[in-house]
Length: 138
Length: 378
Image (cartoon, rainbow over all chains, first blue to last red; front, side, top):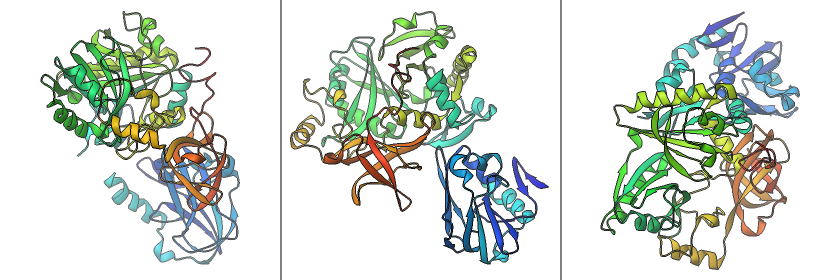
């Protein structure tokens, strides 16, 4: 159920951003997380700043910060909407993002007012983006 | 273009994650910062620190010269002694922190930070002109420097070294054979743990092969003790836990050793040295800011540049921070206005716009009965 690009998995059926977030759209509810590439680049995640429920966000707003021992990476909202649910488990188990980035490592659920699909990658397009731009330059 | 560290091929073959630091391509981690960090606290780790600058200083005036350009008492150093101290500018600001090794009457080695190698080499050459007989030679590119750190470091190296390592005290050094190669070995380090640093000096054409041989000999000898190869990531988190300063973060040309709380490494009683007059003047006036440790009370990781606040007043900044793999908490080093520098006092660290609870503290951050060079049991 996923596309392999080098060492990285791209899960099928999700939408993706250039900044390596994924979005799982179910009606107007959008589950958001970071990709396998993002978690592998950060490596050992030791802290996830979980967003506030009720926060109004626009596409590109910072909704969370993920910290590894050495670096901080911000997580950007892929859609416009309101955060309605956050993954409380990450407060005690930030490593879930490493272990299961597309599953138990989800970050937030956003009730979307606008999903700018034309600005997001499909699974195939994100895989191609990783292959042709990200991995080529690293 | 970054210079690959001499042993880069070996590290890449092992799957190390390589990054650029101070113009060098060197491992950031092999297996991961957390496990490498804990290996050093609990048993032993092997670091490549060849990016550090290495100079040979020779000549009849070399002792007087080093006594003048550093804060340490070089004239009274024994022939197997090493000392830590500072090279200062005329204003008392830190040009670099260095270790000087005395070999004999007129021969020394000096190890400086990678980021400062060019600057310090130039400075030493310029200041050496004031002395009749001093020669400064940069041997960084014809040598490899490895660090074996942790409570089991002595046991690992003893297996491949004929000299009795238990007789080498802290900050002492010898010339010896390790894995059948002549090396300089000192009981020094940058982790808070017991350990050794080894310099292997060859010609530029020999150094890669000889370095690989040395590294492999230590790696094999360490296997039974759970030795892990370690990268710069663990080196940084270990030194922060131990409270050891890093040039560019805690040390700079605008910071004096007094503010860093490095009084122990300044020998005011000796003769004149560069920066002495300025330091005495600053010491007389009192310090505006001073280095402290900061430990998070609420979740979060302090990072370099974050503000430290008392209630809503800005009192200082974080200069280095990390997640401590040992105490599993955000920790940092920083500077605060002197009158606020009280251990255990509650403060806030502003993390991305949010004031997060923390406390000022002393270092090291680990329990010194259980960890560190002076731990109760080994």
